[in-house]
Length: 144
Image 1 (cartoon, rainbow, N blue to C red):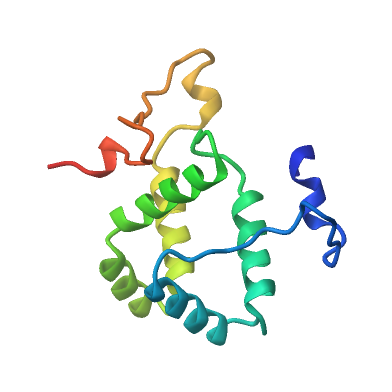
Image 2 (cartoon, one colour):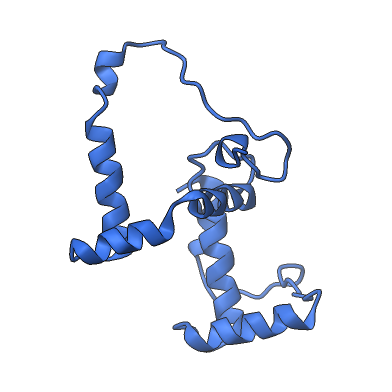
């Protein structure tokens, strides 16, 4: 856990002046989406739901080299959009696995076809897709 995020997991009912954040949704649709999701979640109140949501986003490990946790979340969502989800679901049902298990199996199978990292050598630069702008869009995921 990063030291800057350590306070997020502390005392849940600490309410000091200046620490309360007011949520002001920009549309009635957002309010309805929030209320619907809270109803189907394990949280009984919007406050507990939003706290859990913010904590999960702010504690994301930045594996995709994003500058912010929200940027990391957007990049993860872009990756998920790029996946052939229906194909993976179909494969999962034929293999008696759920979606997550099938996705992990496919990744592990694909990675087993590549040489170990040690055999690739030290100092070999990896070609990584770099976002064109700060919107979290990745060119490698949006080929024409």
